[in-house]
Image 1: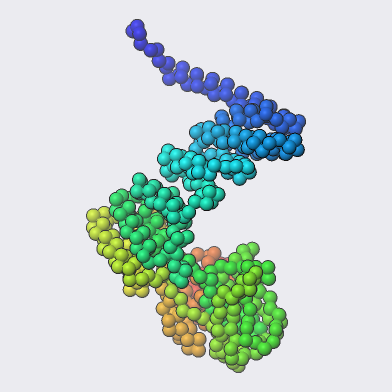
Image 2: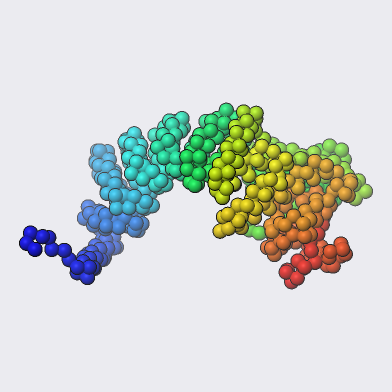
Length: 529
């Protein structure tokens, strides 16, 4: 037994640790009380800074202490300026903050407060060695490559240091090759690529770079098919097509003009954009309001009420302008469809899926086959199933529509915890396909072609409601819509409830001002009452 180290029992060790914690808590409370007392007495000096350093080194997440430290530092800097001391004295004050933040980051590398304080210090210091800060970022990312606080800080340093996007893209490539599972590096890459390889005409990456990225991400995904990082990045690549702000349709009826936009925008009198009627020989005052009554001013459906009825003349059009630069963003011509009732309609055909060039399509076809091969080995790989569905839609959403929906249905069973998400994605794809086909043959004067048929689509939600504007009727019977979507429809359109044999049952009393009729099952009336 001699010469052996005596080990404490579990009870003894727990009691010792409890005693140590209690002593630390007492000491921390004493320091905290001193800090608040000195601040109240305006004793903003080096003693207070030392107390703050002790408290923060023990717990760097107390944002109040960092703010007090800023207050003291600002006071000391102001005193230096009053005393007209050399600027090196001020630089010394700021430099002393950097070792403190590094010590605190060793305690908690993901401390919001500490990273924010370091940014504040470097933003106010007279001189900063930004190259050194970049090296510190690299060092911390070697310790924890997924520390998103450090990635955010790196973006701050890169901006201040004027580091090129090309250099940072090379850094992200290096981090990805070190570990394909580095989600932060993939995300950083998605922010850099549009700066270097954007195709402005298509609002996405140029085909040559997109092909390279698809090849890179395929290697990563197939290295570890169960890891989500590369699959998420591939989804970004396939969907990276910024929707342009456009007027997708407009209806002018007497003194009311309804305008539907491709994405949300603020078109109020104080908004970022202005809608105006052109081609009319009079300047008629118009007030614009969002169609959906809510506090959100960024919306896709807008209603303008003119001071008097607009006489229909050839050449009428709608323009969307920037309210600040008055630059014309887009224009939509109006066609007279019912002169006796003063009705004009304008619309454009839409394609929701991005259109890729031959190089990218060839690569996508290769990846489609690769995904199918992987599914033969791992038939329940949810990421492979979802990616295959997205690739099919990117290649030809119409041709592979049913196959992509079938894949979604299989994913719902494999990944049942997220079945609601896949159902929602299905809702979007079904409605987008129906709208595209409808607009291809749309004719405002033909009642049959003027009806958007969404019957029996197994929908649980409705999206792209702004495209309903030019429909005479949108038939939503045979679906399972939840009440909140029906309520939104009722606030804009005339919703009528019909039974199975198409007999009228009832309608919403306070319907919106858009003339389009929305047909839903009579059972839905019971849900809303």
